[in-house]
Every structure is written in C-alpha cells, then in structure tokens.
Image 1 (tube, rainbow, N blue to C red):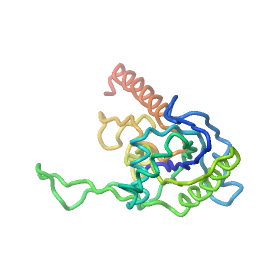
Image 2 (image 1 turned 90 degrees about the horizontal axis):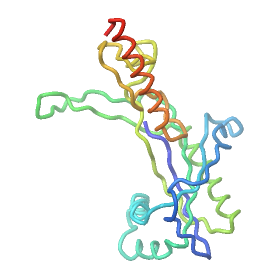
Image 3 (image 1 turned 30 degrees about the horizontal axis):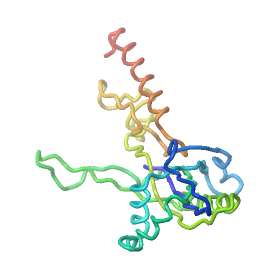
Image 4 (image 1 turned 45 degrees about the vertical axis):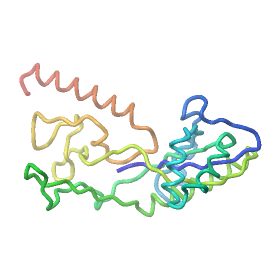
Length: 222
C-alpha cells in the first residue's frame, strides 16, 4: 500500500521562495476523519510544503506527459512565486491488493514477486475532497490555485500484522507465524496506509520487537 500525497501548487503575486526552510511545515489534522461528515471512511491531513525545483519539475511531468521542453520551462519560470499545500490521505486495505509469487523465475530459479495494487473508490473520494480543500486554502490566502498534482508516498503493507495465521503474516511483535526466528519490524506489517508519516510508528514497532526478542532469548524461547 501507499498513502495519497497530493499537492496543490498556488501562485502568488509576491515571491514565496518555498525552497527555504523545511519541506514539511505547518500541519493540521482537522480533516483526519472528514469522511464521517461526507460519507466515506477516514480522511486526510493537510500541511504546507516546500518543493525543491527538481522534484516539482518531475511531478509536473508525471502528472502531464506533455509537460516538458518549453511548457515545463514556462511553468518553472514562476517557481519563486509558487506556494504549495499538500494532503496525506489514508488508503484502506483491499483483498485484491497483495504481493504474490508469479510464474516468472529469477536468475536463481525463484519465482519473482508480483505486486497488485489499485485505489479503492473510497481512496479516490478522499483525494477529491482534499483537492477541494487545498484549492479553498489557496484562494483564502490570496493565491491562484493552478496545479493539482497527484502523488503517493510511503510504501507499507505486504506482511500484515494480526493474530490469525490465515489472514496475517506476523503477530503483534512482528514475528512470522510460519518461521519462529523471523521478525519483520518495518512498515510492511501495517494493515492500513494511514494519513501520517509512518517513521515514528516504525521506530516504535522496531523497539518493541527488539525488546521482545531479548526477553524471548533470555527465557530460551528463541
């Protein structure tokens, strides 16, 4: 899985120079459960964002395959006048989103993994509602919303955490149901792609797993 990470590029009369300072700046979680009001699950968070020039240029091209040459140059000439507001939207798990072993073999005769992923209608609803809010913010601060750029961030899932070996890969300590001394302590164990950066949660899970391994080794269970 990956969470939604769209941006709204807003043009201002004055120079903004958004490359100065930290990329992720002011943040609000007011819309984290926006769906309760608008009839869908979960929601998104919002923050201001300082795009570096190369990343912004690549996003222009990713969202518009004709954005190169003079067209891309014209857009980037206004770079110092751009501000950016971004969303991070939650992506819920789907049964069809999974990693399976394919028929193709690698150089070692092992099956190559196949990644199957698509967005749910709920994910697209979150993206749609966030786009409206990002544009409203741009107008409210006397800017001109110009480009809504679709993007994604943070790979998660694939080794689902849970208590049932039939529906999950690892237990609550990241320990494989099938292989006792195999532990997965990263974002692969997430059961959803939350509307938040996953780093602190990954750190916490890794620390918890390490403490569990230490205790299990002391008692001779590992």
